[in-house]
Length: 346
Image (tube, rainbow, N blue to C red; front, side, top):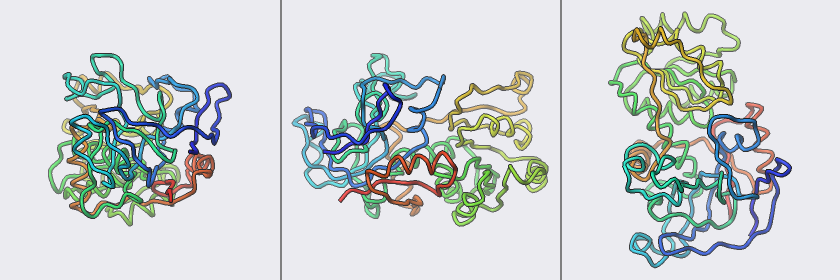
């Protein structure tokens, strides 16, 4: 089969022919229906000191996909799936799924220290067939199409929990910073939860999508030099939460002035190349709180996906062929993409 593989020796992507994998007892073999591109995939090609772990080389990139079960392993968990099931799945493997870290924090911190992440340290999903841990998979709810639901299995879960974990009440204000692949979903989740939403981005096309997704106000922080003051005025003191989906350190630096003093939260989701800088005086005197949100485990995957199906949360998906993945990456890097981009397989 064909696969888009990252090779650290030349820091490039190659369309390689590789064997179709075989599932172990706890795994599923899945024919990929759609694999979509996440900004995290670009981190493989960039200098990064934020903890990205590389392993197998070369390896197939991509950690966001849906498909149809071709074969289930003989184990008890895999036996809960049958041939032809439409499934979505997430990307941690080789972890125990039972320790406190796996259950309550994230599989990356599994106490075994053996966790692998598909798409980063072992083969991911920009290939025709994949094996996934059955514990990380679920049958798609009615109404979700495997040819279009792939972005929900990273972007959707991440955006849902980035919004939901802020703990806001209906009618409160949330700022969504970065209205692209993650943010346009975050806006839909926030509106479905009854929140008032302000979308912030530096690309006008992303703000157009934000408006279509229901944002009450949008601001281009690059061209509108007075955007922070306007947000404080609109919200009568600042937003109750600012959820940052971008990989821009400057966008994080710009957040504190728009957060309501004493009760507001800065939710960290996007991961810039540079470490964030926080003012200790602000944190010590409770100007605002800082939180992070898990991008998905088998324990918080289902609520996000079921909420998506119930509230008709749809990713804006532009489709391409497997050989077009380098073009997709260039569009993402240049901020010319709208919503999510994905490869749909026949």
